[in-house]
Length: 353
Image 1 (cartoon, rainbow, N blue to C red):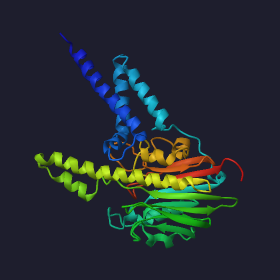
Image 2: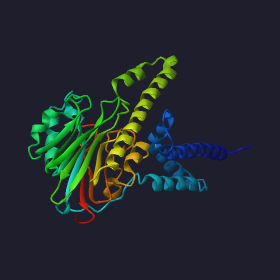
Image 3: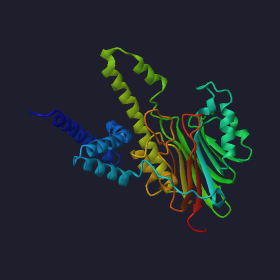
Image 4: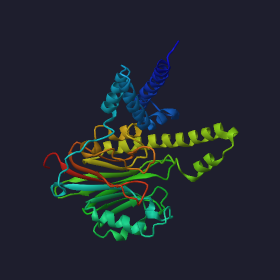
């Protein structure tokens, strides 16, 4: 007759093996063709939860002195090796005076234009923070051009929206001259990317600012689907959400391919930053990153969360730089002004021009 502890161990072992199988699929997902196979992207999106599950299993098996703990150790090490660290311990930061270029990426949610919060002076707070950041280049997503005039110390500006409406744009504001600029149109989407070739004292660098397709997990249409509590419609509701989010994944994939191809043709050292709307385990992230440096891996601290999410730290805003750059600092400031947090990065060049 089985003892209760043996039954518990058997059930937990079975659950752990299922988790391992799911994690292996998630690890392979970014490198498999995802056209039409939405579920592969869902696996990548779930990686933070899988990582947490393996951490819990690790402590569970250690507490019971079971060899299954080694499975979690192996999976966690493979995840770290393949995708980079989820958590960064304290990194030494270089003083900003020693940096050649400081950039900031920030999704400002239209500076509260449509009153997602009732805070009266929220837009002023965002503008004041950005102005006081001492960044040389500001890259905004979901920006409102009404506020461009407030950034007088950034005289070189470029912005664009896919539908030519100024209500929500991506923008690059620079203290240094912009010698060339352009836009990358994303088909069948209001999202877009822009670039600016910025002339520093002794060289030109290209800055890409992108806002990839949102998954719209909490938009009004999806909330209405979930609000219907009719039990008989649950399967239908899940199918609708699966299709909607899956189509967003497909758009992200095509958008990342377009941007990656464009940056490969750049004649200058590249900085790619913005709101990717996906995590570091996704094919979207890996398509863009290639051999670029993720500034969080270089100088980040903690989980580096850039999005306000109640369940787990979520990093979906990035600053990626070519090997020509040395990362001096990476800072995320958890401000209450938007659903995203600003990312400030200080850079130097690895060699003189």
